[in-house]
Image 1 (tube, rainbow, N blue to C red):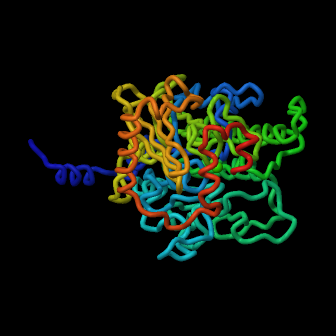
Image 2 (image 1 turned 45 degrees about the horizontal axis):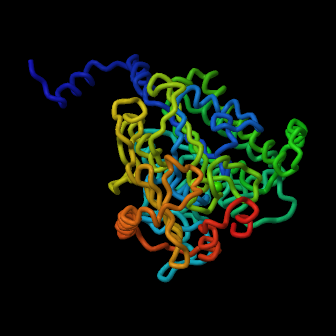
Image 3 (image 1 turned 90 degrees about the vertical axis):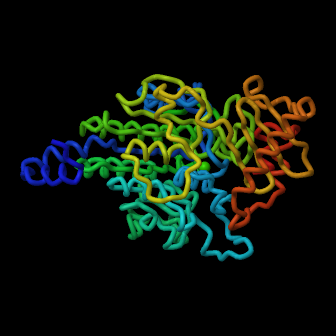
Length: 472
Ligand code: CA
């Protein structure tokens, strides 16, 4: 007997009994929970698995042990807000005018209230909801301060965090603007109830996991650690008394709180028997900052720049039984890949029709596809732009500066500008960059700093933290 899908559904419904609901739930729970953990302004070389020696990060390192370490993972911007817009949408954020960090300078044709993630874009929360997930955003939002930008209107069922790009980790003693307040959904958490922010985010994340075991969940857990201000817990400062520099000691203590948080979350998953059925991505939002005592190791440059130290970040992923464990993946990947990877793992439904710039990484990291997910990647923030194609990288930072060309395979620290030796390569990469620029929008707001720092940052003679501190 041949039956069509409609008849099959009718037959199944006829024989469906209330007792079968249990098995339906079991089928549902096969879809993995997905947790995206974001750290803020951490140094590439400050994680144990990326060679860090001074600050133990055993819990974060364990994600690499349970899954994949990405050596060549890039964010789509070297500052917080546009990088997070890329993570949240899976699209180059310049496509919707989110080129600069949040400022108060709307571009011509835009209002102050337009500054934030364009309401016409879909977020990872929207995509996960269309796959039947319960969603939460925890931590730093930094995607606009208007109601239309509020996480509860951007694909998230719950929000526990703050709207600005930073805030104190402890309670404020004086009155602050609303954007610095801690929100529990729409309610402002009184400052008298603020303990230590990193721990508060971890506790809420743990609670959400415990409360949502019957339905797959998605969690965007955007810690503001280890962004300034350098607020560390006193007991952890004591633990790192072997670090002589006080700023670096505070950074280490803040990293320790972040690492403890990741450990607690994995623990809660294990306790609730959800460990195997949860896909975890850990990613840092941009390279080491000039002012937080972080360390990019052998990568040149810092946050805000197109040097590797600005855009190449720590990135780990685990999904036991689905992706290999304890492996290093050396092909070029992007933070833009998180959205399509999550969609693929969750069931494949998109909330919108706009094309994504990221790729589903699952076939690549599981070995089913041995090509590179991205032959070419682009960056632009104002006057400074860059392109990486294979082992070659070009940085263009205005007519005042020479174009820079590096071979990352031979010169990962970007010490030798090869532009004059390979003019044809410079021409080709410049053309590819310009072609991409034709596909993006103009910035919807301007940078708070202007172009000067960007121009100065990308000169060969400007090297080292001391010099870069002058051009944050
Ligand atoms: Ca950041």
